[in-house]
Length: 316
Image 1 (cartoon, rainbow, N blue to C red):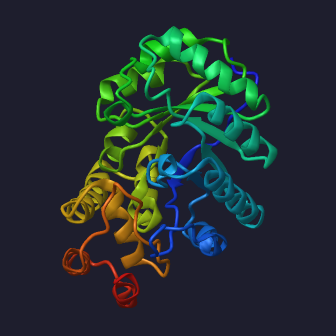
Image 2 (cartoon, one colour):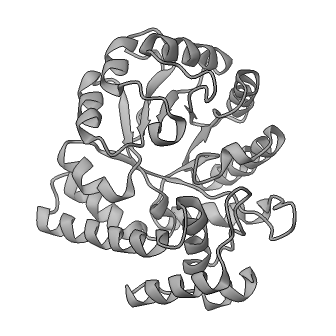
């Protein structure tokens, strides 16, 4: 049983990192306070900073710290759970980021595996996370399982069965995989650990097998159907309603991602559907063409989503 108790359940929005539309794609931290308030008003009580959606691995160590500091200040007012992704860089820097995050009293840490000298066994992954944990001994630690991106394919059911009490701060995983059989085994492996499903398109399926916590990019701009799906998971809505909500989310995501990769397109969608201009992504990701952004806006309008028409002028 973990020595640190992690009680957060429900949804967490993996937030975008806002950039200015300049040559350096410099940070635009000025909107983060209002961004946090916007999400809080939408009943999003948790945020994940510097994850995949937030382009964390495209930021320098100093930039990642500045983003954390801005969010730490923002959530003092909104009281949202602040999770910070510290992995995806040299272990020395991962440790530095963990120390920094704990200093700013974030609520939890999420950590990718080593991305070059990759762990190949549960034991190797445990040893890596144990090192990270020692740098932030008072903060709950979760592992970021994203095999499609990290190419680390350790079975999460077996990993969570084996970890026991080896890491006092270890509290769970973010499971970003479509293999729900493995996800179910992970969830059943250790009742003291939390499994966040990181798939927008499989939330209803996750609810069906008993997963009750989710980290989904679409929560940034269409949280309502996901929050209703949570009610299905709690037995307060029927399966037909859940299918309808999931189908609606999936239609929106299909229209958005038709134009490029996940972060490239979702970041544009956030700017089109809210009052927050997130700016372009950083290279090697591409800024969508004006033509593709206009098509996306038209498609989303047809699905009943309001578009911020001024956003197109600001973007291009």
